[in-house]
Image 1 (tube, rainbow, N blue to C red):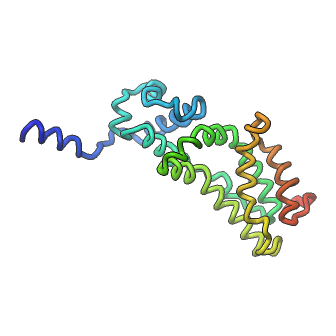
Image 2: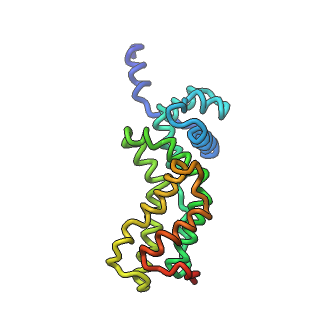
Image 3: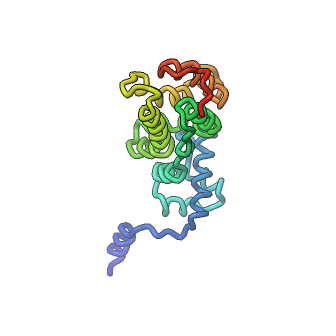
Length: 209
């Protein structure tokens, strides 16, 4: 075999992983921390290598590019903060959702802001961001509303139901821009009771079950 053929064979050979799942999670944690600290544009493979005390070549051999590494990191941290919530009433569910989203907003909001611009230019990155941080929460909120409709708490044709997810997740991102403050649990609970409950026809005095 000629040297040229050998180089071609190596170029098309699949990547061989010698990284344990635990070590990979260290890389993912470092990537997400660096994104929160400095944003996507400032993230470099060199920076991740330095933070995790590994060779840059290891990262390139395993993931190939910064985008691929960020996508893998996002997939590793799929958020399921709302999936367990089922209090028996929509008022109770939404209050608990506000508490759970608020508890994670200090981590999630900086990450979403760091990736928003880059994600709009990369379908792969946008898909990973949605799957990691957005879609699981949308599904959980939609399930809460569906259960409420089945229990007769709100009518199935309630026009406000369509916008609950956009309101609750949107205000989490908007408050830092508008007020330079994180949308914490207390703020989101007030928002739910003052803005979402009236639109759905729920009584803000309802404590749920």
